[in-house]
Each structure stands twice: as structure tokens, then as C-alpha cells.
Amino acid sequence: MKQFHPIVAAIALSIGACAAAHAANATPDPAHVAAASEGFLRYHPDLRWRKEGLGHYEDGRLDLALEALKRSARYADKGSQALVAEMYWKGEGTATDRAAAYAWMDLAAERGYKDFLAVREHYWSQLNPEEQARALTIGQQVYADYGDEVAKPRLEKKINQGRRGTTGSRTGFKGALTVLLPGNGNWISLDAEQYYSDKFWQPEQYFEWQDQLWQEPYRGRVEVGAVTAENEAEPSARE
Image 1 (cartoon, rainbow, N blue to C red):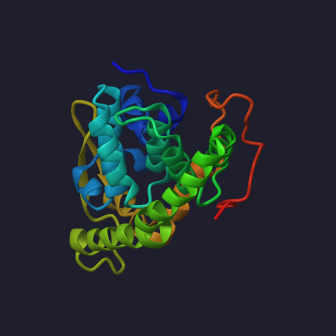
Image 2: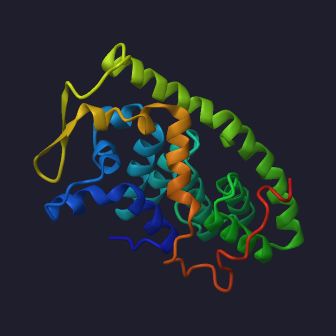
């Protein structure tokens, strides 16, 4: 099995804690339980394709991992965008391309997340002038296809479809329905009030939830040498 590098491990943890919590007979976080549901993932393609990409990465199928992560990236998933950057930087599933890696990490840092800003600045410091110029050119196309301005509306459309399609009219909807989700070898019961929490089905609140996940630095990061989360820079400083 291929070993995760630190940034991959951090991203995996953001959706992977459900099985561990269940195995320990703990009450799982509704976010992690919902993320295991096929119905939930159908309308949250950012998590669906990130989950698939991480699975391929763990299995060593790096070309498939990169393809899946790019699909997640189309739905404004900053974690997947950072993983694509790392794979370009290290030549995993693709030829090494440090200029493309910078462009993707700059995209991942678009919302000012400290970890991604720190890695972005490390990348920039390693590029030669020709690579820096090329990175800025590549970045224009990356932002055109995957930046929040175009990617967030894609995800909003899917979430809104799911909100309408799974419950019909949700006006005044409470916990009258029990949702069974596949768990660790059996079924987990989650009441509908949790499953249909606004933080999952109202796009604005969903993005706020994502910000909470990524805003604080991941303290296990050791991959970027002398660069730390305190070595911050303004988002998109070179645009």
C-alpha cells in the first residue's frame, strides 16, 4: 500500500474518521456518517471524487487518483486542488511539472488557508525564473476552469438539486424520517434532522463548514522544510 505524505494524510482525515469512531462504539460525527452515504455523495461531488481519489492513491493507482481529484477540484474542493499540486510537484501519476504544481497550489490557497499558503510559498521559492513565468501562465487557465468563481456555482447547483430531490418541500421539515447509512460492516441510523442539516444542504453554510475544516493549520505538517504556517502571504499575491 502506498504511504500517504503529510498533506494527503491531513485531507484524508477530514472525511475518514467515521469508521474509526464507529469501531470504537463512539457516536460518529454526522458529517462523517453522511459522507459515507451514496445518496449524500451524489449531491456532494466534491467529497465523492475526493474520496475516490484518496482510495486510488492509497492503492497506488496514481493516474486514476489524479483524474478523480481533478474531478473533485471542479467542484471547488480546495483539499483536492492541493493534492493535485503535490502530485504534479512529485511526479505522481503524471510527469513532474513544478510550474503546474505552483498554479494548482495557488488555486488551493485561493481562500487564504494557512497550510496551502505556506506550501505555495515554498513552491515559489524553488522555481527558477522560467518556471515562475510559466506558472503564472498556467495559473490563468487553472483559475478559468477550477477557480471559485466557476467551481462554486457547479457545486451549489448539485447541492440545491439534492435538497429539492431528496425531501420534496423541506419547509418546516424536522426529524420524521430515519436514514440508514452504510457503516463499518453494518448500518448506522441517522435521524433526518441531522442528515439534512443546513450545513450540508445550504451552499453558503456548506462553504462555511469547509472553511472551518481548512482554516486552522495542520500541525502534523513536516513536508515543507523551513516553511511554516506562520510564514504567510496574501492570497493570489502574484496575480
